[in-house]
Image 1 (spheres, rainbow, N blue to C red):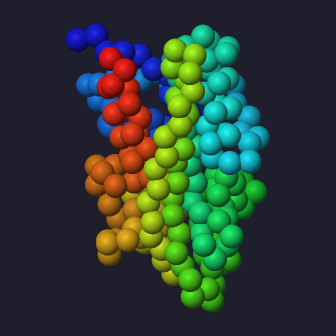
Image 2 (image 1 turned 45 degrees about the horizontal axis):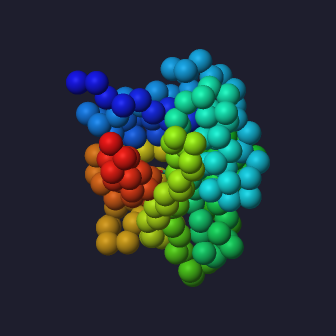
Length: 194
Ligand code: ITT
């Protein structure tokens, strides 16, 4: 079976692994390494959408390939939607534990612990650009719980669950996550194009 190829412009191994499982048997997803792109594409936009577009456009313009890219992050109501586009380096360094601890520190004494994860995917296909969004709502726990996943998973508990993302298997998280919601929209769209 020949699968259509698409570049996924990311360097994040966890995300490639998660998305690979969502797309299995549907698309051959190439990552930046596969196409010989070792540039850390600058994410200088002011929103998830702008950053996703910057990444997908870099690949399409420089490698002449159809490509999708995502930008995601955690937005917390009581922190004016921080860490938002700064999620990966909220503490100043790209370190999940430090970032998560900074969030918990800033949330000390806050009664409103509502938060959501958001993903925006930018797809460049046949010289057109499309955006897909996924959001999951929940709250920030008082302490980290669970060892699965990555990033802020140990302190995010989705609505309707009594476990954090980090207490869920990858399969379970993939059924409900912000990235999964956006990816499902992307996949549905791509299927229509065939
Ligand atoms: P690329 O830009 O290379 O794709 P990244 O780590 O910047 O990788 P994102 O832009 O998607 O990935 O996410 C930014 C940060 O938001 C990420 O480093 C985590 O701290 C957090 N984050 C995003 N999705 C998450 C998830 O599903 N679970 C926990 N944290 C997440």
